[in-house]
Image (cartoon, rainbow, N blue to C red; front, side, top):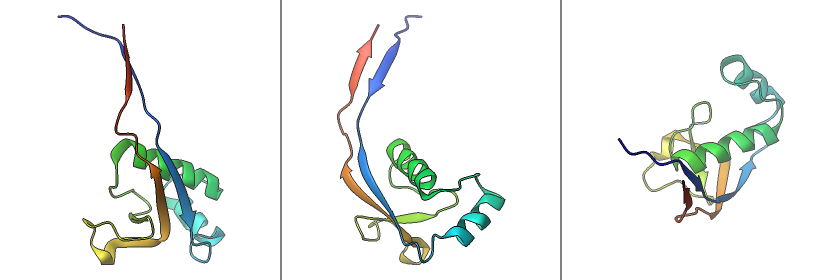
Length: 101
């Protein structure tokens, strides 16, 4: 069997926005009971952005479906969208640099 060591690099850029009237300390406390020990919005933003880059616009456990560029994604059920979280998509890198050894 022939194998190749591949390193793949891509760059995606997002702005993750929270409605802090909803995503507040009380919400984070409840989130920590069932999900991850995130204490800041920055930690939540990092997790959401990483999930978006890896899996695309899909359901994010603990957050649900999020708005994309301020709108409900065309494939999402309007009633299941968490309108307190918006992902502004600056760029989704469709091309990736692959280094093969």
